[in-house]
Length: 243
Picture 1 (cartoon, one colour):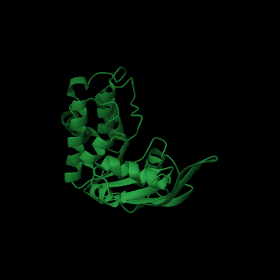
Picture 2 (cartoon, helix red, strand yellow; picture 1 turned 60 degrees about the vertical axis):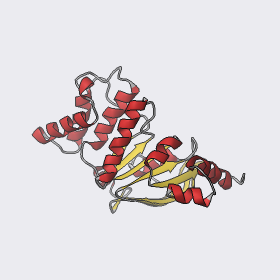
Picture 3 (cartoon, rainbow, N blue to C red; picture 1 turned 120 degrees about the vertical axis):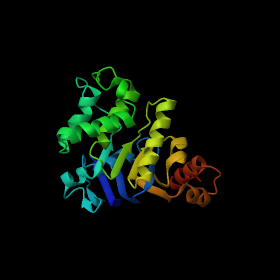
Picture 4 (cartoon, rainbow, N blue to C red; picture 1 turned 135 degrees about the vertical axis):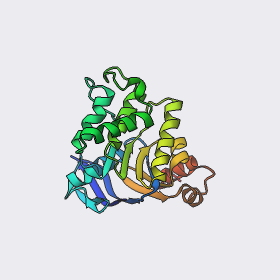
């Protein structure tokens, strides 16, 4: 479970997020929605310990991400927006390297790498160097990296970015499987179709602030909207005084 309370972070004179608070529960998929530049990625970066907040707290499975960043990293798997992988390593080597960083060794590491290669359908390019991989191939390897240590919590920053239809469908099924297994999944997206298809709970951010939160049905009812997309537009408009 992930709990965020009052997170605030500035970059110089620019306030990226202000007093952001929400909870992402186990066994549920929580979507972090907002226009480009709304503060979604900044929030996720604080959660996966790349950024320190100026104020507020973030807790992953009762671990404070600021006070105990190394422990927090063991409890989370991260797919960043830029799914950077080492270009001179093969897909299999990229995955194994991160497994080793998380303390996996020997036969246990090999079994876990093989398992993820099978689940994510990586076998066709598992022994190829990553340089020249398609976006879909890079995302699959980066996702395997995030899952290598079997974390209870997944942070996915626009995971379907650049994926084709078939790869997107496979990704959705994998995310649903993680939910069914009791994992906490938090992901950011601006693709409303993806959010509607996956999310149990939604947090909408605009200009660095949470402007609405709830289940898709709750948001549609709150804003009197026929679709989630309409509810999203209404929430942003309401927050900006445009309603």
